[in-house]
Length: 303
Ligand code: CP
Ligand code: NVA
Image (cartoon, rainbow, N blue to C red; front, side):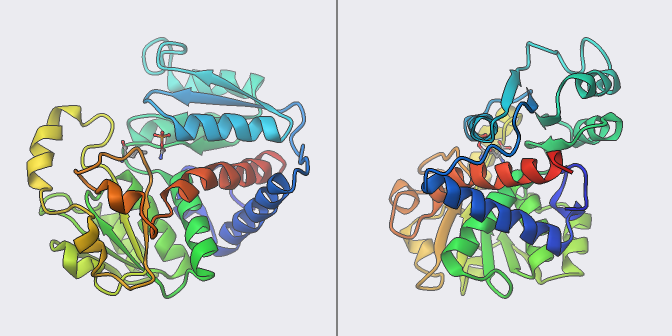
């Protein structure tokens, strides 16, 4: 794999992407077969979290353990990123102790700064702008289910947020059509969409039915992301009608799958019968976070 860190899916060439997918498939198969794969003995991953997490934290930590390594959790009150010392110094110091850093931060510029100064791989565990590890797991999950990616259509119903941005990047990389339906004013970043449009079809619309018609994959995420608690009430009324329920899901292709990165707010962006229904691959996505991230770490940290 060519890049030496993973801040955005847009850093990947298509062959890097498929190398991650193939490696993840192998590691997942090994785990299922009870075969050890200690490909990172004695390696340590530093995990910096300024926001809460279930999946990201547990999947990275367990993944490191599976590979014979170890992970250290550094929560908001531990290193006080942004308060105690400069991000540059944190990056330089961590580079002297650990073999890789995964960080979940607010401003996207912080992860870029960590990556710029580190002499070890830095992985983006979510910023306000991107969630690239989620997109890797999601596209792995789609591929497992559909056996193809290029030419499929993904409909994203909801906020043009960090998760949507990384999915748009990934859709461009593999040639998947992408259609997002959001209320006016909640569209994804224009320049990110323009870049993706050089590679695939990206539609931005304001009617969930328009996005979902003919879709192979329906995706949704929370209306208010972490850090947006103060506007959650306002967004709840603006996003009324943007719920993935049986009626909306029924407008997609009959073989379509339903996805959500979790955590979910039932009866806001998705109904529980759909999230836990037969078309849902939500919990496969959650599991595949671990397999795809293990692959990513193994490729980045063994360069
Ligand atoms: N999907 C996801 O990133 O979940 P967490 O916020 O629990 O890590
Ligand atoms: N958009 C959500 C994703 C959580 C995994 C958030 O940023 O809170």
